Image: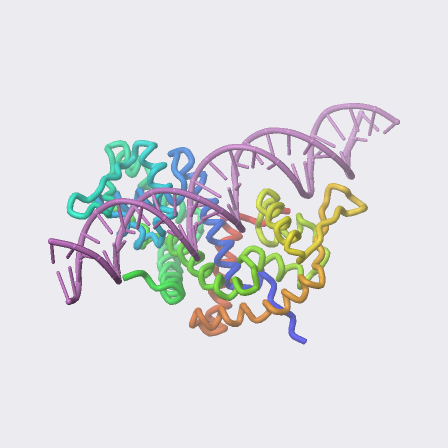
Amino acid sequence: MLMALTPPDMLCFALHSAAQAVHSAYTPLLEPLGLTYPQYLVLASLAAEDGQGMGQLGASLRLESNTLTPLLKRMQAAGWLTRSRDPADDRKVVLRLTDAGRTLAQRAADVPRAFAEKTGLNPDQIRDLRDVLAVLRNRLKPAKA
Amino acid sequence: MLMALTPPDMLCFALHSAAQAVHSAYTPLLEPLGLTYPQYLVLASLAAEDGQGMGQLGASLRLESNTLTPLLKRMQAAGWLTRSRDPADDRKVVLRLTDAGRTLAQRAADVPRAFAEKTGLNPDQIRDLRDVLAVLRNRLKPAKA
DNA sequence: TGCGATTAAATCGTATGCGATTGACTTAGG
DNA sequence: CCTAAGTCAATCGCATACGATTTAATCGCA
């Protein structure tokens, strides 16, 4: 009879464990800045486009309000961003980097390059892998409206 | 000046979000069995090799005792496995599936195939992606002794 | 043999993630 | 204009993850 797959043979586990390895490779780069990995993603997203709404940010980072709300509150408490209600629609929360947040984003700007170096992959390989993973992700879990 | 990368352009985010998408694709397959995804990995590992020590299991799943201990206690409480000390070395915990655990593992045996179908990838693509990710993981975070 | 170094697991604290629910606000339709 | 339906963020509960520390047991080596 056929042996069932064990985790090391499974694609799901390869993805799961690779994601954790990436996380642990980022940690020493971000910890000196006082950032966690998801916080870094938020910072990078807002640095590129400030004044995003929580819904928009959540859609691009694929996070729900139950994850984002406490995460953003911690970043607000750290003084990196402000959370305010949209005057035109009081349900929506608008996020803006503070000066400290923008400064931090600049200090973190080199992190992806440092990470790319750790992977040992060349830019083409990185781009290809990224695109394959994005296709897989979108197939498994389409982005929201 | 060069625009800093935003999350959708980053390999790390592609990996992070793809892993979460995989997790969410597994959930509806495992939830009817009462299993979480990491619990499923433990079950699959023990089904292939029963009587593993916690250290060995942690090395193959890349999890530390601080994660495994409560996870295994929950599985023990569910009646799927037993945790006992190694008579030859009282520091080590030995894990064994119960009959209920083995039955559950059989019921879960088809889950990877159902997942593979969801990905829309063919077996070769799955194998290639898995191997690339394993290389990346091992480069970023070498397995323990 | 005996004690310091090492190892294994457990514990503690913090930060995600997500399902389900709640509450406040806005919109749509009559 | 006014209510029913929809939307958005917040809250609650639970389950990972992991750094740091603690405790218990074993090993190494003089």
